Amino acid sequence: MQASKGTEGKRMRVSKALTIAGSDSGGGAGIQADLKTFQELGVFGMSALTAVTAQNTLGVHGVYPMTPEAVEAQIEAIGEDMGTDAVKTGMLFSGDIIRAAARQIERYSWSKVVVDPVMIAKGGASLLQEEAIKALKESLLPLAMVITPNIPEAEVITGMEIKSLDDRKKAAEILCQSGVSYAVIKGGHAGDGEALVDLLYDGQEFTTYTSRRLPTANTHGTGCTFAAAVTAELAKGTEVKQAVETAVQFVHAAIEADMHIGKGYGPTNHWAYNRQRKEMSMYE
Ligand code: PXL
Image (tube, rainbow, N blue to C red; front, side, top):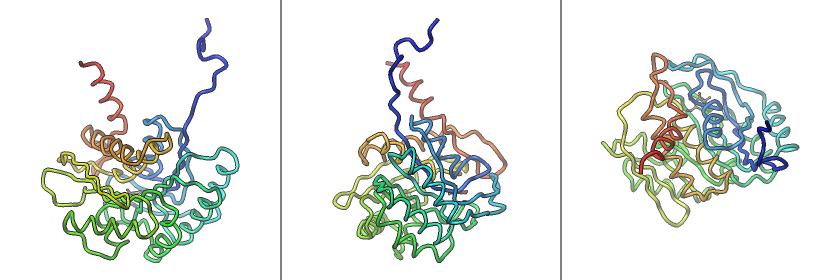
């Protein structure tokens, strides 16, 4: 029996995405979340590690950064051989690592670049040194297609206080003036009550995505997962507005089907989006 009948001689069409980020030993955030998300959205995932965290759902117990040379060498290995359709950056830790990543992104002219400006873990551990904010703004943001801060991260980058949706719109405008093409300011940290509103600005118009706020503490890694879903969709050729819509739905499903793993802030369920869609397809 021939298992491959029908596909013989045909080459599978594959979209690729690279994550430049830290490792979360607990598996819920960082490159683990990114690679799981890429896989679920049908994209071949690759990674360049910036740091290893010793971490579980209770918190970050240690941070072990890579050298900037090691980060550059990993990206170069991918750039020289496989290439990528889209890139995501997550935890970058230091100004030197940011500049190293930016140099390589520029060298290979990668344009679909999603920057998730990770700063602080849920328990309060710092994942980005203070001196690195300047490097982020000067070296990385001009190369970014999409930036996906939460409200506290948007406040640090723009230097303005964000209390309302109007403030968020103003912050998104500032972000787009800094060289980014699209700014998504996520609503998870807003006190909006029942509704959760994510905001996209493309330099001209605003789009809002409203979902139901879910009552759970198991939201570890939602930021990484969101940006990874945007990256995967961009890698496949999806337009930004639709990529953000898919990311909103992917994260909502992942939180809704939380697995209660660990004793603290648990990870989300990266299978949930596809499982939900499969189930829905069985109904008329
Ligand atoms: O969610 C931000 C984040 C990113 N990257 C790594 C992390 C975390 C949060 O804990 O551990 C490696």
